[in-house]
Image (cartoon, rainbow, N blue to C red):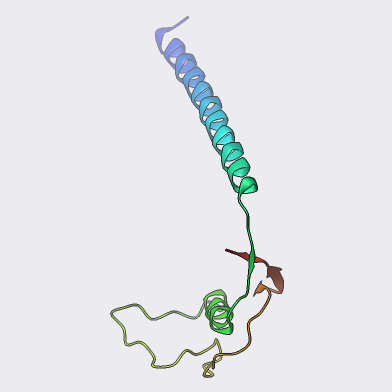
Length: 103
């Protein structure tokens, strides 16, 4: 067997072994984290209308001003309408899907 073929075979074997190790490492850590999170006591949190409005703006793709740009004095939604403090929602809605927010 030519020397460079042996090198290629060893290289491919090394990649396969590395991939197996990383997958096993990732799955082990993911399982531990899942058990840790399942053991915690979570409570549903209400979602302020300001947070829902900011989420809608981010999801819409409208650029959000950075610290170096002038910040608006009032919070606006994706249609540039001023947002007042409104009622608390039970869910955070993104693309018509409701998500529970925990604390």
